[in-house]
Amino acid sequence: MAELASPEQRQAARLALTELFRTGDSVPLTLVRGVDVDSRGQVYVGDWGNPFVTVLSPEGKVVRRIGRRGEGPGEFANVSGVQVLPGDSVQVYDVQQDRLTVFGPGADSVAYTVNLAARGGSAHYLERVPGTDRLLAVYRRPFASHENGRDDDLRKDVVRVVTVGRQTVRDSLLVYPSPASLVLRAPGAVSVTSNPFGRRAIVRLGPGGRVYHAWTDTLGVRITSLDGTGAGGFTLRAQAPRVTDQDVDAAVTALGPNGARFRNSLVEAAPGSWPALRNLVVDDEGRAWLALPAPRDAAGEWLVYHPDGRFAGSAVLPAGTDVLRVAGGRVYAVHVDELDVPRLVVYRLDGLR
Image 1 (cartoon, rainbow, N blue to C red):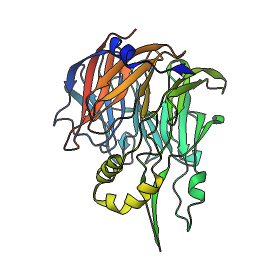
Image 2: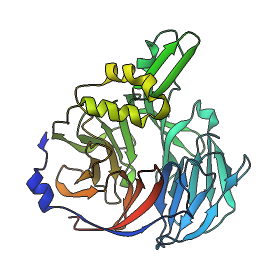
Image 3: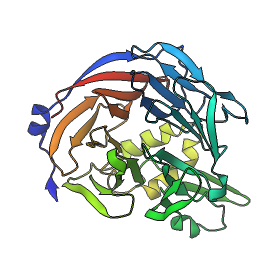
Image 4: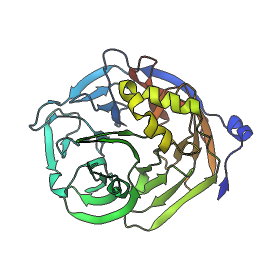
């Protein structure tokens, strides 16, 4: 176990982030589920609330939109992920329709589609291993309404490797407990929402088909090859901040109009401390970006580590900002303002070692 970089080390290795552009009203967003970049620097944005992919120029201007609402070829219910493949083909995943759609380079017409429904459940995370027909998919059993909650704790996230032709290559590459939920049970009704203090698994596909995975109770990453063998990783010795009464109050407020109904469940479920890890992103060089826990109204710090645990730098982003992708010397993030309006923000990155 390695030592967490000290505040002095983090300050000395602070990365410079220069904002290049942020989207405005011409790019309405709800919940961005995927961002990728092609060889020309064009940015592809997949948003849950939009049945299309928005393509932006390197300067942030809208170039075109790919797809429309519907159930036919090239049509989507919700865009759950977008990925630029070698040669600038674009892969779009729609979890609502259990379908993968690939568009040719620069084209709005469909090259081919793959119906994934035969897999027996929907993958809530799916990425293609570049240059192959392999898909890394994370499946989660739907929440079940039972008279008691015993089965709820048995739900698992299962990471599988399958082919575009729907053949299973590895059925259980990784298995994790599904994220804990807040549950209210009443006669004839069950209400469920996410637990803001709950631990969860994070799985990301890195360069070379390496799978980065973490459990948010620990500030660290394990790296696995597609055949299941270990390929590196590190764990940092760190202590997560305590959960305070003010944190619980803020979490109840963040749940919106139904927050008060979940207060007792939230108080009972709140652990002594926040998860040690808030989020994980893997950049195009295989470095792991680790988001430290922070209140919603405070700036967030991301620590960057090489796969062998060497410290590479620290980035501080404004409150309400979450990193989605780091590639080509740019950081692609989403900022949610005080009115809960999300914007895509792109920064130039300098100082990474």
